[in-house]
Length: 306
Image 1 (cartoon, rainbow, N blue to C red):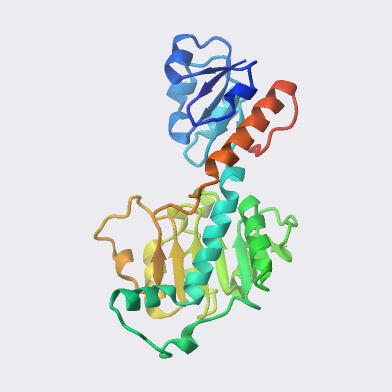
Image 2 (image 1 turned 60 degrees about the vertical axis):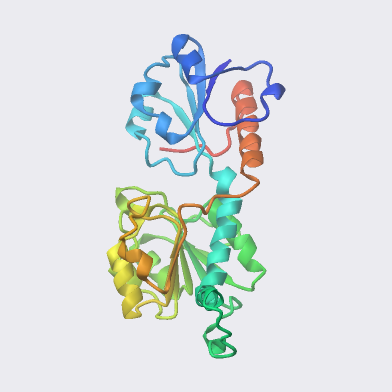
């Protein structure tokens, strides 16, 4: 089999039956190129049109909102994503953000920079995770990994999804608009994990934030446009919610003059939630499994149904 490889892969020597090609090699001799492993930016129609025998596309990222799924449907292409590459590191990042928000880490970092020993003046402002409720808005691989980790803190985990199907480690999964309201209103931490689509555009807005307890926190590690940033800023300043942490913004990079930089109860990270030293290893595991599965006609991991 011929495979266009446009992403690091350290297990090529275990697949002698596969002819791994660069972009240039595949475009020069496209006959028989059945598969592509590449970032979403490459997977545009003008590139894929040059591969008439293409059957399977493996995107390296969890999100695939940049892809034209109608094009994939028309061509009958199979699509798999990279959610299993990043689910552990994103889950770790979410728990880190929960702890930073609850323990007032940003305040203490500021004290350290200013060489201020705050003694016990902020002692009662710190909160424990024990007994708190996490609402996962979008329950999937990342949500399951979050649930595993927060169980050790003694937290309750609920969720929301369009299907309402039960999920590992999640006590109850709600569905429908009333279900979302029920989940968010219970949350001490509402964690948004949804893919981006027209339906999830500005899902974090004044209405959904208004459902939350004043002591609650929002964490967004999905996509920037899922959040109405002006609404979030307003609710943070007015005390509608206690704080927020976001790894994604709209636009990215976030301009240096954005109002978001100046909000004291907001933690910002530059789309790095998935980062970690295990990424290459997990990518190799996914790609190796899926290539073997494709060759043998077996089930692919992370199949996207659209």
